Length: 384
Image (cartoon, rainbow, N blue to C red):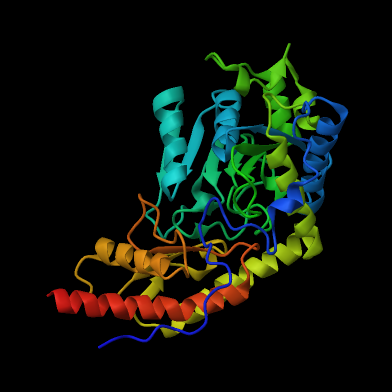
């Protein structure tokens, strides 16, 4: 028996968790003012890079005495730069509840070989942040992009900590309220919440992090793209637009366009409200649908950007194959691209709900989830 497809379709089927959807109504024409063919060290290039830094500060409410730099290699490059430059002065507390956090654990334990205590939680759960030793340096992700689990707040981080906190906030910045007084190093990439182009990372340092950089020299050699100091002093130019290596001015322009759009929807509060509305629409669907559930076990830790779902129906024979088939069917129908779970995560779906996604598109997608589920159950039954 043929299952009838829904009549309405999402206007934009791009629900990928990275690179993420562009701001609504974005076109290539928006980049016409890019300083292409010009040196990033020319006045026009430096002005645009400085604008990107200071507009980021304005929207995110980053304190005036925090340093903001544009660095190579996306969020990965920014976080690696922070670990290799800052860690080793004292033991580390490594925290992981999804694949990217697990990657940072590997780098510290196996590459840098720093004395470290590792704290892990299964997908869908979160580590007890109050149980950590904050006299050590603590490395963690704020939002698990591959697990759909986030920190509900920073209350567990003490103000009088002796160590530094290093936070990978790549799918949290611009969608969640980050407590800057609890974060000494924060990193994210342009291609996440604001849907910018890839390859550039943001590195944000508190005065405590700067003091560490200027008082401590790691025991290992640092490649050029990781060096943040010279002669024992912070290289201030990095945090004023004089980047370590050549940035793409086309990507810089795209980020500036995204920042302008962010201001037009109410800045950080508006972006959070948009993400909350998107995630809320999916949660309402999940609550009334018996065959699907949130991967996040505690609603207080449920992400409002990378929403991860799992199928719970007893009729499903092979969870991984079923989830892959559902995602493939939705892509073939042109209603949802790239929503399969991350390769290291439990089988299921991952739907991006950051502020660049319209709630109307999420609402249009939900009947298609039901359609694809029913069609794959029917296909599985016929195959048996």
